[in-house]
Amino acid sequence: MPNAGDNFERINSFLHYIYLPFYQPERAALLFPGVDVENDIPVQSVIEMDEREVIKYGIQLLKSTFSKIIESTGTQNHIVPLSGGYDSRAIIATLIDAGLKDQILAVTFGVPGTWDFELGTGLAHRFGIKHRQINLNHVEVSTEKLLETALAGCSWTFLIDGFYNSLIPKEFGDNALYWSGYMGDTLAGGVRARLSIKHNSYWGDARKRYAKIIGILHSTIGMPSPDYDPVKSLPSDPIFANSPIPYIDQLYFFIHNVNYIKSVVIPEGFDYLLPFCSPGWVKFMLSLSLPQRIDKNVYKKILLTAYPEYYKYPVTYLRGAALPSSWLGKKYRYGLFKASEIIAASSPIWNRIGVYKRFNYLDYDVSVRERIDFQKMVKENIYDLKARQIIDWLDPERMWLDHIGDKADYGFTLLLLTALEISFKSEEILSR
Image (cartoon, rainbow, N blue to C red; front, side, top):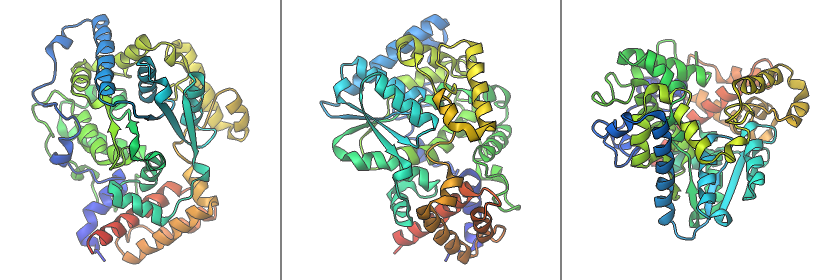
């Protein structure tokens, strides 16, 4: 078995980031194929446009990007994982606009009573496209299934999420085309653009901010050894010293998305179409000013102007408000959502007025505590992990007992430790 010395950096970086945050040039080069991020960005003509021209050009570019992809697809079925977000809705709208409505099969996976599951389902029904639900309450998990996911290229990630994302291509096979909104939301900006303004003058500051945000996002603060510094796992120098891509974005693009998101949401071995990674779209989005990218400002205006009917329907990101809603309307919806978190006992009532639970996939605390398949998988792996004696600063057995005894909520933590153990198991298989 590996010893703690050999694996200290790898184990601790995984426990903090939930993936290995190392820069891999060969993988990073595949993120934006056809784009030289140091010389192709920014596009001067985009910089010189006023906002009205930017939106008009963005719409033309969005539609032409999809048209070129569609022209090369033939008559195959188009499988679209459909959530309540912006990106998958843009794919659905563009395919319908191209006359392919009968060839679309939208698939929504999760559990009833959550935002993406309910809004994705509602959107499919509203626009009359074929739709399939995958209710994860009825999908059994096991060590064998997660090990298969790890061996398929998803090791050293939060494996349960990778397993769930693999359900769609496994069900429909390799004779279909799979669309993904991968990088659409990320390129659009959002909070990262605001952070770029504050933390872009010094690479060290960007690294510290990124490490802190990821730890808070995944609730992994305190999981690594006290001797571990998560900042030191990140590249010591800017990934692209001469690129105008902000430092925070460089970390999210070439560390987070390359090492984690892509591995989880795009299973290997299937034909995935990634329109938001097309060279023209990438160059356009990264040529926008930071104010244009804050809160996905221009991206949302492009989508709403191009496909107004689709974005009048509630959006997960806005907690059930529609994109054209007023500031007051969005605040009202957010207030309802916060109230539902406080008064959780009456969740069926909240569902009736279009307010849902926030978690993706499943409530892992409840699943580990109540489902036999989760209990079996987690228990056998955390005890195997403890036997390795490589995380002596944690006590997986105590976490397990406290969680099952309803003394603490360690569902996510136990599943992360399960993913760590299964990742080791997958390496042992591959080394035989």
